[in-house]
Image (cartoon, rainbow, N blue to C red; front, side, top):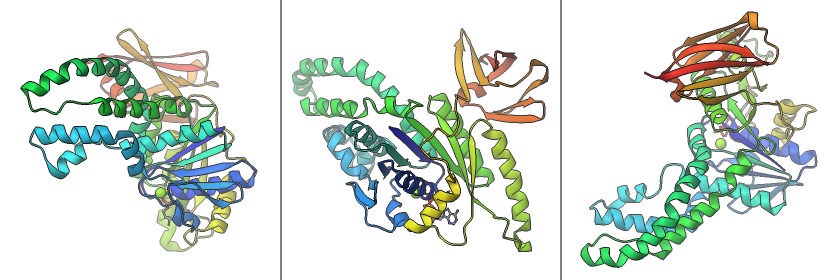
Length: 389
Ligand SMILES: Nc1ncnc2c1ncn2[C@@H]1O[C@H](COP(=O)(O)OP(=O)(O)O)[C@@H](O)[C@H]1O
Ligand SMILES: [Mg+2]
């Protein structure tokens, strides 16, 4: 079983890449499901077929599904939402604002991602490809199951018991709505839905994330942050796709400057994603929609390789606690002690090994710390960061 998450900023070509990858895996004989959890569904547009919340056959061996997040949310969170609406109502907050507050941002996608587990457990598919919501959203969501389970484990058993005792008393003395059994059931269901999702998505043997970007400054910057945070939360990114690269056949002088600019950005991509597989996809001369054109995209992207294989191995970096200090550990299997140079500039760490340069976007938690020392041992660079000033 393999799960491939495709993510990146809006409009970069996520759906195109996810849809093309899915056709490719199906053509190779893997029973494939491609599902979109991005509320901006466009799988149906990409394939030029009708799709809905239920999985629908697209071509032999390939099903597609556009998850109706609202419906999933209603099933799992309905009672809790109603309760929260009552509480907000009681506190004087009414209408749309109150309604919006009963669902935290990205919650709908959280439930959509829970469907990955259902499909994984069903055994009906060899490969599940997820066309995710844009970067930041997905990130937070992916990191949530762990936080949530901690929270729920701490709060839930107690909360239920306390409410049983407290409810009759509160409702006598105050008009604040008190949670009833249904609300707790709703919370329990929420927890159950998320349980196990993180195990699947966080297992590098099962799940690989692929970042799609364009050769543009802001897009790359965001992709690099995503890369850092996915790494931090233990999700394996094994490849990136740089989409809309100007092909050599374009010789029009009008695009000369653009080609230079793209060239510079492509170098930045090589430095920032040195540890993962990097693929370029050209800017086609038409919109790449429909099964046939997406097959062309899949061919250009993967050639003879199987997209379900891990495109690169190993964790590019990890963060370890060392008392008050924190150590950023970067894999550098071929580096010799003498030629490693580490330089910090704002939120970036530049590591130079001979002619080879690599840069890492630091997570916010490390940004506020000073670099104390860097040491190369057993193929790993260990950069120690001191306490927060
Ligand atoms: N390399 C490409 N060449 C030409 N058109 C492309 C290319 N990549 C994407 N497109 C088109 O750009 C539009 C947006 O792509 P899409 O995959 O839907 O982006 P996202 O899912 O990231 O929002 C679509 O109409 C798609 O057909
Ligand atoms: Mg899309």
